[in-house]
Every structure is written in structure tokens, then in C-alpha cells.
Length: 282
Image 1 (tube, rainbow, N blue to C red):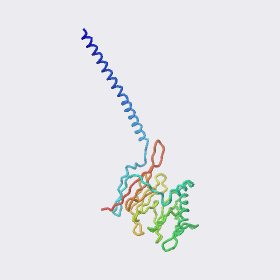
Image 2: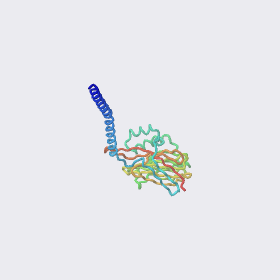
Image 3: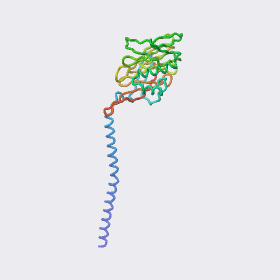
């Protein structure tokens, strides 16, 4: 009888222990389940956010090869950001001008006023327009072309080492640029602001206008042959455009670009960077 009671007691004890262990395991697994549910909710929220973000162009998809008639191969790829300073003018000056002017032409005039004071030997302006000094010491008047709806030319920079002046041209709407050869006064019309490579062999011009369409949107590439500019290509992308550049070496330039991002119904411009490389074709 005693043995029977002991066996019954042992079975009851073992059953209780197993139930306790089962409850313990169940209790320990509950936080894991809650964490899994939380992670799933976060993932669903992030996926929902992604569906609410639309871009006119996805920067990571930039991987383009362009071929020119000059047997050159030009590649464009997305790249990491780098610091690109303002165009030959201190950032503090640009920032101060942007604070007091509300349009790009007014800012260009402010830049010109500043630069004319420190470049009196090479550039001047009067009621007739902008005058640039040629190599033979004569002055060339840069007149506006009214047939092209030009309204003003403003001095921006003198690439004295390479023999070219950079001039910004304001239209009734939008703008463009001109390069003026300081030896013969020859004018080369450009999409946008010019940047020479480190050794002066190449020149890239960049301009962005992806929304209004008043200015050209894209880039131009030239080869400089001792003052004679040979066009390599024009490239006008859709949904994005370049607005600044920095040469890394004689054949590689980093472009700072912008596109439009629509997030939760709100439209904003976002920046991204691209690497353009020039290679001799086969």
C-alpha cells in the first residue's frame, strides 16, 4: 500500500514539473513572438514608405556609355559624393548674394560687380555692354543677340592659362554661356558653365533645367586643341541634369546633379553625383 501511494505521489510530482517546464518555455517564447511581430510591422511601414517615394530618375541606375564621332568612349556612372566649391568665387560671397537677390540674373550681376573690381585689367562694362581685353591689347565688345532673345552678358571668369573668357548670357527666360577666345575673339556658345580639365585638353559645360525647360538641360564635351574647341558630344538626359563639375584628372570629371523626388505628395530636388570618364576608342 505504501509503495502504491509513493508511486502515485511521484507521478503527480512529475506531471506538475512537466507542466511547469511547459509553461516556462511558453512564457520565454512570448517576447520573441512580440519582437517578430514588431519587426514585421516595421518592415511593412518601410515598404509602404518606399511606395510613397517617387523619383524622376533613380541615381543608382545611372550607367551609360556614350560614343562620339571622335572615336572616344564616354562612360557615366553613379558615384560617391565629393566636395565641389562654387565657381571660382568664394562661397561666402555667393551666400551673401543669394540672401539679398531673388533670381539668378541678379546674383550673376552681383558676381560680375565683384569680379570687375578685381579684374580691371581684363574686363570692363559700360552702356554699350561687356568689354574683354584680347591678347593684342584691343577690347572686344560682347553684344547681346536680340534675335536669340538675349538681354545681358555678365563676366564670370578668365581662364588666362587656356586663353578663354567665360561669360554668362541671360535670356528673357533661362540662360546660357559663351566662351570667348582671347586671341581672335571667336565666340563658342555653350549649354552652361564651362570647366576645363587640369591640363586644359578637355572642356565640359553643364546646365540643369529639368522642370521649366527655359535653359538647356545636359552637358557638352569639347576637346581643346591649342585654343580651337572641337565638340565631342552633346548629351541631354531626361529627369535629371548636371549643374556643377570637378575634374579629378585629365580625363575624369565628377558631376554634381539634381533630380526630383516626390515623398508623401511633396516635391523636392535632391542631389547626386556621377563620374564621367573619357577613353580612347578602338
